[in-house]
Amino acid sequence: MTFSRPVEDEVDRLVAAWQQERPDLDVAPLEVLSRVSRLSKHLERERRAAFADQGVESWEFDVLTALRRSGEPYELSPGALLRATLVTSGTMTNRIDRLAASGLVVRRPDPEDRRGVLVRLTPAGLERVDAAFADLLRRERELLAGLDEREQHVLAGLLRTLLVPFDASGDAAH
Amino acid sequence: MTFSRPVEDEVDRLVAAWQQERPDLDVAPLEVLSRVSRLSKHLERERRAAFADQGVESWEFDVLTALRRSGEPYELSPGALLRATLVTSGTMTNRIDRLAASGLVVRRPDPEDRRGVLVRLTPAGLERVDAAFADLLRRERELLAGLDEREQHVLAGLLRTLLVPFDASGDAAH
DNA sequence: GAGGTTTATCTTGACATCAAGATAAGCGAT
DNA sequence: ATCGCTTATCTTGATGTCAAGATAAACCTC
Figure (cartoon, each protein chain N blue to C red):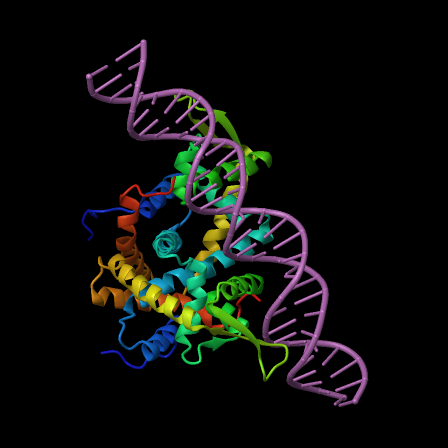
């Protein structure tokens, strides 16, 4: 049996409220999915604030890291970038425009496909992203301090199970 | 011990790429937090599409459910609503304006505090939210089908641990 | 090799969100 | 009672995002 839980979060209160109001419904799915959504909102806010201190925008970072981890020559197509960042094509065009304007990436025609374009990190972009990424890892590690290594591994595994159906089927927005 | 993992998600590939490019960094935090962010984006997209079929907007739903689960008389202040939905005050003002325009809520001055306002669900709003909520639960249950009850419980508990620091301190945006 | 389909990117217009500040009322200590 | 601080909501202006469609090239089948 379970003893009294010492700490509650907002979702515990939310679920209790629903049980009061709609005892006919099983709101168990909220225990997981509301927490995912709410945690993500908090993370996004943290990220935004932390990057702002450093003169990087959150959306810039998403694009630059995708290029960075692709390895030399740090070059991807817009299509690959939008799949990596889960945004729509119009958003990606806009992001690339602004990154190019600030000199962090350059665009060039794909020599192998005249429909296509390749986006490449500049040296300035490489420097910017490496600094920001190290900083992000530091801050994220703190957010996870409440879980030991084994717990983090379990958590990652359970989340993967939920994520696989999305990542497997190519249902990304175009 | 763990045997070979049969399926990978995008985050597995992302982590492998980082290990290749930056073997000096420990990117373990991404295993959890990137999955949270990505899963949330997928969920948001699902929600948006599913609600669109039904003539409800995702942001409307957030506000209406907060009112619904507060119980009779389905009335909260804008401040309580923005804490429940994790949006800023400007956003909430805008949302209430639009919900009031479509007759799903009404605004009235708080009789106990002349700075304040109370937002109440109308009968039309109540009907709308009850239908949409039942539908949401159906769809969310499917997304969780890959986990058994015990796994869902473990997952919820681990997420709660990460969420508590955010929900405890009143660091919500104003 | 022509026609139709698919893929890749960009354009457009509407819109929701945020940060910062304005307004106004309550509260608390002297 | 008044001054300053806090709380509650709304306003403003900038901006990032999305959905839908336009454009253009590649591919594939007959």
